[in-house]
Length: 238
Image (tube, rainbow, N blue to C red; front, side, top):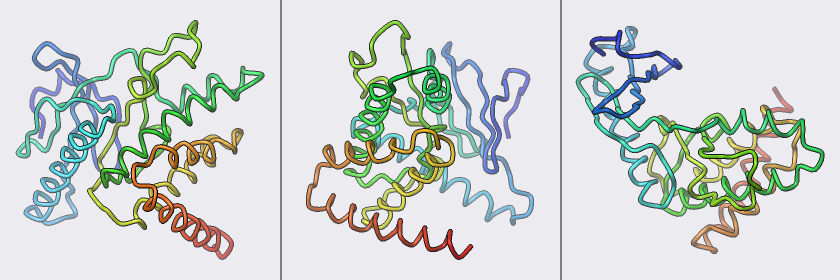
């Protein structure tokens, strides 16, 4: 458990963790605390928590090594069930950026291309290194240092897009898991951004162009279509 919680500002809470903002070693810092689950046996809960913290840190470090911008990890405390990581300043959640810009734009092609280039490239880098994010949504992507007065085409998308929340991430090489990761993204886009139905197809096109192993990419595309078909059948049956 966190001590001196007066120094921590709670900014988000989910089913698995609380996220606080604080200052650590003079730097703005996010602290992710995986709180205790009272319904689980104490020893089991602690073991699962430690495993998930380790898996999350491992995925973040591996993603950064693959060229994907992620928050830097400052400290991991298994006893306190916490990860201290970089607070990304001058950033906006991609979901909010889309909502704020799509409705006021007459021609949104440049906006969609910018988003597709960023997400498609970074997800391809993750999957090429067998990193499954597990929760690909526009709520788990940040855009940093975006100036409204500068054309989006001039940005380096690799540096401006930051992927966050690797709480469900794992290292997995199977084609099926990569296809499911993409399907999760498609469903989240259709739910959160139904006004731009072409966004996923643009992201998927960019993904295929940047996936390192072209033969495996073809397998992922084929498997994705299978996963998509299964998902549609479930939706029809209910």
